[in-house]
Every structure is written in C-alpha cells, then in structure tokens.
Image 1: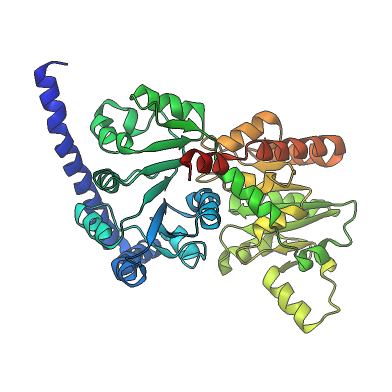
Image 2: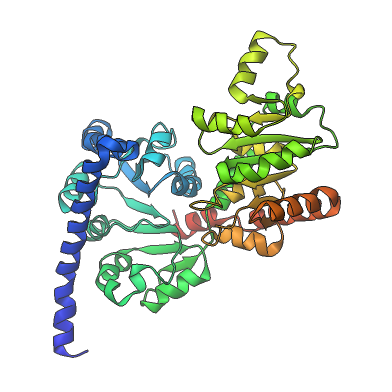
Length: 435
C-alpha cells in the first residue's frame, strides 16, 4: 500500500467511529419519536432512562464483576450455561447481565443467576464513559451477534478481555465488505478471543486476518436445551390430559402463529385419536379466540383447567382433546409429552427454537423460513426434522410419520442424537479460559 493509501486508511478510523456514533444517536432519536405509538420502543426508552440509576444503586464498587451482554432472550439462553458455570465455579465474581432488547430484559430482569440485570446503555461515547465509571468488569462476554464498537474499543483501552461466544458470521455482514474494513478494525480486531459456532465463521474471520484467536466450539444453545431437558418439570395436569390416550398421538405445537395453526388445527379436527397441545406465540385474547373458532373438538385453556381442577378435584382433564397453553414458562417442559412436535414461525419472520423440542428425541415439523437456522438445516439433512410448505405437504408428512412407527422412531432418534452430539461448547469455552 502506498503512502496515500495508508494515510486514507488512518484517516478512515476516526471517520468510521464518528459515523458509527452518529448512527447510534439517530437510532436513539427514532426510538424516542416512535415510543408513544410502539410498546417495545416505549419499554426501551423507559428502561434506558433508569439504567444508570439502577447501576449506581446496585453495583458494588469493591466487587469484581464478569459482564455478559445479550441482545435478547435467545442470546441470553445461549450465554446462560456459561454464566451458570461461572456462578458455580467462581463465586468470588459477581455477574452483570445487560440486554439490548425489551423482549430479553422484561422477561429476565429478575434472573437470579446474575447480581445486576439492566439494559445496556446505547453505544454512544458519553454513555460508554458513564458506564465504565460505574463498573469496570474483569472480563466481558458478548453473545452471538453483539459487536458494539464504542464499548469494545473502551474495553480494549482499559485492558478488559472481551470474548465473543457462540458467534456466527455470514459473508454478507458488513465486516467482510470493502466498506466495513474500518468497522472491523475497531471492533472485531479488538476482541480477545472468538468462540465461534462453525468452520464457515472461522474461515470468514481468517479472510480479514483474524486467525490466532479463533476457536470452533459449536453453539452453547445445545448445552442450554440439554440443561432444560434434564431439569424438565413434571406437569400433573398435562399427564391427566393425556392419561386415556395410550396408543394415540400426542402432538405438541409450540410458538405457533395463525398460518401454522391453519395447517395444524384442520388436521387435528379430522384425527380423533390425536391429542393436541397448542402453545401459541401470542397469547392475547383476540388470538386465543381465533384459535378456538377453528377448533371442532373439545378444548380448554390451560389456566381454565387449573382453575377448574381447583374447584372440582374430580374433573376429568382427559375429556378435553386440545389444551391451549395460554401462559409462559411451560413449553420447554411440555415437549417431553409429545410423540412429535411442530415449531412455529416458519411462515413468518423465521422459526423459533427447534432444539428445545428435538432434545426430547421426537421429530419436529417446521415451516419454510428456516434457512438462517443452522440447527434446523442440519436436522432437515439428517432426517430428524421435516419442512412443510402448505396443507398438502403438512398432511403428507403427518400421515407418513403417524402410520409408520419405525419412521417416527428413527426420526426422533436422529433428532435427539444430533442435539446431544453437539453439546459441550460451554465446557470447552470455560476450559479454554483457563479459570
């Protein structure tokens, strides 16, 4: 590179950070403008207004903190196995957990595995300076896609190790474009170590000369779903609901949306030997009523069943054919009661948590929007998961699995074997940290 090229590259660094920070300010302004009309934006603004007050109140200046940052609930679940290993093996550290999204913070703000839980203040220079005045962590873990330039540069300046865990990269990301070189230099090249999910991510990092500090460990999400499986709750009401269904099918459908339910419910209506447990992603009253209008067999909402059995201990839960789960926190344990599962979202923004069902060694059906989910792609290839695109493909897949016991068993075994065979990422990270 000639002297002019080196000069322009050097000049691009402050320009890059300036443009980046400007984009954060514009994002913050946009959130404030839409917040009166958008619940999630409103929660974000409210949460950010109280973050520094919360930190001043809860941070112990004399304690040593390990900082975990997750964008939302899914990333939190990926980081959770490592957090829990830290808690168990190094009680001398306190844990600071930050979220970007309300969908993570509002669900886990009372998580007892962390000492302090709050929003991450938006990545402006002033916020970053205020943040590190209140807390100086001994190390930081950013989960999956989280690469906040100003925070990472500040960690580097303060000699705080930053680890990227369960990270995954794709060629279209800005880091691998010609115009993303400065951004990459100020973020990725400041990361102490990358614990990536796959070889493609390692190859992409190598293409921008990040090689020595990269380890392929897999996805910590597998460890999390195995932990959940091992700790799955016994649910007596679900067992009562299924008690007279020996030889019949128990079909558990999780995180469903209306297009998913348009496939599932007609099939259920036509198959009298099937019990359906339906856990919709949205449980507001209007959606629950839409579901109930489609059902032609006896159904009950889970909360109503709870109340009914309190009022009348002799009530027979098995007299109901469909149980609608209209509360949160049960789905991961309910999958254990299924002969097969359906995971929703594949006819919208993308499928939800396939490993959460597959860990129980049952086949999983999903919609077509699954290309961004590596575990779904792997399970489709291995035959533990099945893609359905319309009513015909859904009916054909269901008929095949429910009339061929060996096919159902084999598909379930493949699903469970894949999940358990890909576990161990959290232990590998913990070992590599040499703590």
